[in-house]
Image (cartoon, rainbow, N blue to C red; front, side):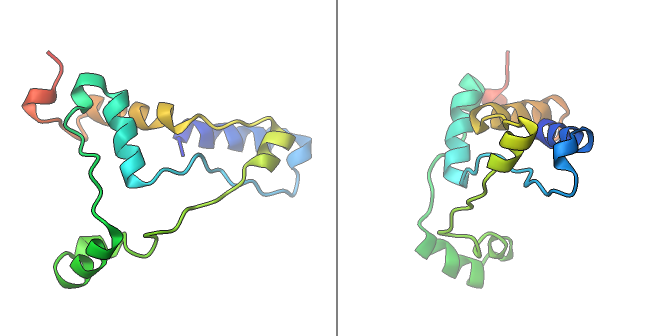
Length: 127
């Protein structure tokens, strides 16, 4: 989810009489890590060429999480599952349409790069 969409749905819900007493999932398009990597690779152009789109199979990640890498433990519960949320009610009552992931993922990456929160390898940085 893009923070701009989160703000948008909150403002619409606060100002629309149709939203009184309703709940609206403030979600966007679901992307798995491999899909997100492909969007980054495509969306960042030359700077994204070093983004790996390889995905280890789930059957290899689970044992590694148990035995070697505690950081992987956090990502194993949702392996193999697809998140399915509907934003139909927000679209119908509030006119809300979330931004597509192909826009929000590169936008987030650009923001992180601009604020120095992440750095690209020297070979991938802009001239």
